[in-house]
Length: 186
Image 1 (spheres, helix red, strand yellow):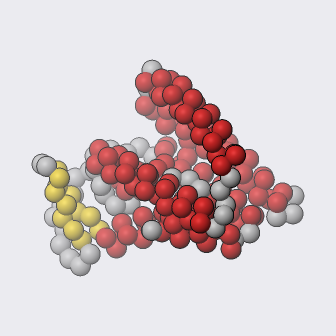
Image 2: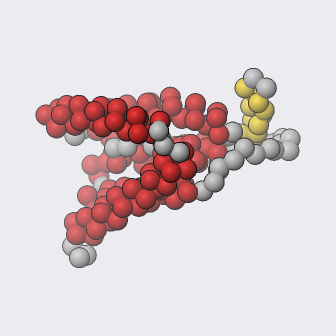
């Protein structure tokens, strides 16, 4: 729902602001990919806002006072700038919320689809959708995704994480430059 609201309300923000938010999200995604994520063990937690989650043999505490704001803000920002938020959700779920890595990956898969669709719906409802641009880009994305998937299968995970991080840093730099130029700062 927050991705829909972000997409729907994105028009009230100046291009400069949206580009700065997007640059920040790209940088954050790159930085999160460089943080080593390992399985953690947790002592038993009890109290208000703490759920004890059990999936199969796996048991971990989920602090809703952290998980809810993290997912709402990620969804809102992702919907606002037109991204799915997947590159933020897994590291944030693991680092901020304590979700085991393999559960975070599986959970993020459905969250990414929901976030992308809801963000799209918010933008489309405002009239911010151009099928003449979207359809060719979708075809190119499918082709690129297929090639990227084949490349990923032959690559070591830590190399992919670094490539993703550095690509995001480069894109964040370009977006920051573009935002500063749009804002008349440079």
